[in-house]
Image (cartoon, rainbow over all chains, first blue to last red; front, side, top):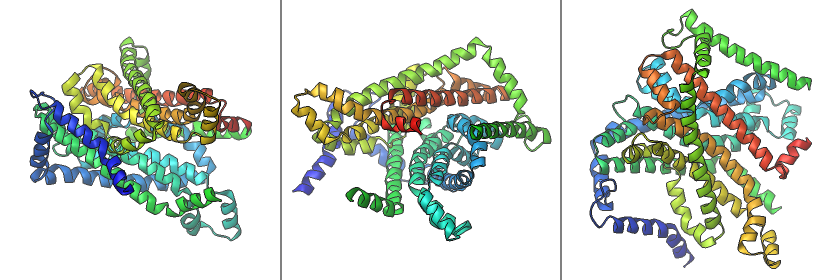
Length: 257
Length: 259
């Protein structure tokens, strides 16, 4: 019974909204808003088939490569900068500036420096999405428990083992917060980089449909982007729960005690 | 104090090192000067821009879209957040829809904005609103959920009405969360305001960047990019200052002062 109630809560409003959408488009067709069934049919026609391989897969590939590079570089530099006080002071004003540049303006710049190709799109993703990971890693490394830090010093745990067993786990809750923020920025930048001079990809396709006034097709592209966004957020929640299982458990114990 | 001085000196050294590297890269020939003009030329262009009224007009356009979009989304998110948050039924009924709509990247709405509004400011507003709204709404919902039940019940037994409870119990709890939301939203709003100008071509700094790039005016393009970065720095600083002012009574800020 309780289970049923939860399901009702989960699907209630979405179903209501779709029914409203269906009811409101029953009458004469509005040029901008397709009927739900038409949209579903278009979605199937457009995205299942060849376009899946020529536009969807390349986009996702670039996104994944960009995200992996973002996380690896962000954590490496974050640990470096976070570990040395002088390096932190040295880089702080420049980081503050670069973080504040809206990443999309780097697209025209990188088009000049790198040219219009896959590398450019990946660099755009990395250069915009790296800041949350980098800054959160710096904060996380700085905030490592001083007692644990002193203890490991006393036991002469230094170098790689210190990094592996003290610094990275200690900073991981912060790092995961950064990764979550970076993921949504990376998706935005993937789309933007494809809207500029490109011949494939989700962003390119949606703009193409819009220019040709293919309204249901355009909406189907927006739906695809929405689904990618939701999938990414689910995956990152899942990974976060796995990586931070020990941390969430610790929090619960502390709250109970 | 001397510690702060050394850190400031190190920071300045970092900026100088960056500028010198930038100056030398095209000089040595690592990168073509046509694509990466030396820092000095970009800075000259930047100061040249500062004296032009057209530049300030563009800054004004961008900041108007930013401020309007941000203000609309904050008001809408606070009202909706308080309404949804104070009812368990509404909170449970809307959570799946919110979780579904929130991760949709707002740039996906660019084609829709173009069709509906063309190159007018409304296009920018739509994108800014969609991006900033969720950031604030989520924080307000967290804040309302965090209200101390003892305080809530105390207020109720003293006979405080619905609005008085929102004003004196819920609002002070929500405020720190709301400020976090505003901080996140103001950065995202700037990104989307400039993206809209860059891609759709509504007037503003982003449009100028696209124009200088396609016109081959590379030093000017770099100067404009530096300008957007400085605007971002100013916005961050302003929001942090606001946060400190508004939450001066809150322990998180008082603690910082005491240390």
